[in-house]
Image (cartoon, rainbow, N blue to C red; front, side, top):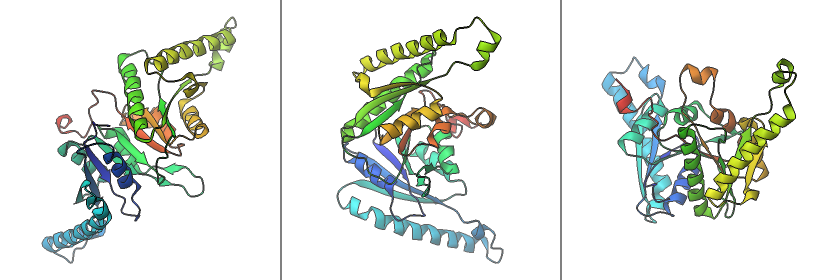
Amino acid sequence: MQKYKNILVVADPEREQQPAISRAIHLAKTCDDVKIIVFLAIYDFSYEMTSMLSSDERDAMRRGVVMQREEWLKEIIQPHTEKGINIEIKVVWHNRPYESIIADVFSQDIDLLIKATHEHAKLGSVIFTPTDWHLLRKCPVPVLLVKGENWPTNGNVLACVNLSAEDETHEDLNDKIIKEAIAFSSITQANVNLVNAYPATPVNITIELPEFDPASYTDAVRGHHLMTMKALRQKYCIDEEQTYVVEGLAEDIIPQVADEINAELVILGTTGRTGLSAVFIGNTAENTIDSLNCDLLALKPDGYISPLSPNSID
């Protein structure tokens, strides 16, 4: 985990307990010379609509709110700074939190972004906010979304790979995901598990092509995925018992396997699709994580350029 030298933690203004900060502290204790920046973007539209006040008075009110939050964060991080952890705080006034967060990722040369999610009390599932979705799609660095529980020792990390990939970008992303899983597993001595979902035989093919043999087709597809998984696990010295090749949709299979092995962390790749393609097509990653009940680490492929990066803005 030596590569994570600059960690940006998004504070949650709605809760006293800050699991994202706790997770960053955990990571910092495993590496040398780690810097943590606790970031909070706040905004209250009522301060902009107070016509009775001058612009200077509104600015003064906003500064007062920012200072209050700074004092609040200082109290939270004080026990950690006293133990020698390098932590700074930054509070900004911004009406689009995700934009201010990503801007700080670029300006501070951040390696990892950590943010807490919210758990649905009745369903037990994780609730992702609009800010979470924007960060998953547009943040150029790995995004770690955490729940409240601490990582257990000797737990399980689940790396999600795409064995149907035939292009170099997806193959490189598979390697990146597995290497990240191995690196994270070293922190808590966790077991690395691999999962891949392969599609079922389309029903309409048997109707359109009477001579088509669905059983042979299914066997061939499964055989291809098993052989590809075997090559991948052997490459990274992962036991066969810790690999899962299952028929079905990835958004169904990944949460299912994560629950079966009681995974503490799921690592997957996201292409960061935005705009109309995200609305009509959707990302496998985004369809998957709504059903997860554990921490999630989302990685972008090498060469990904954020739509909010300085170089991408004309």
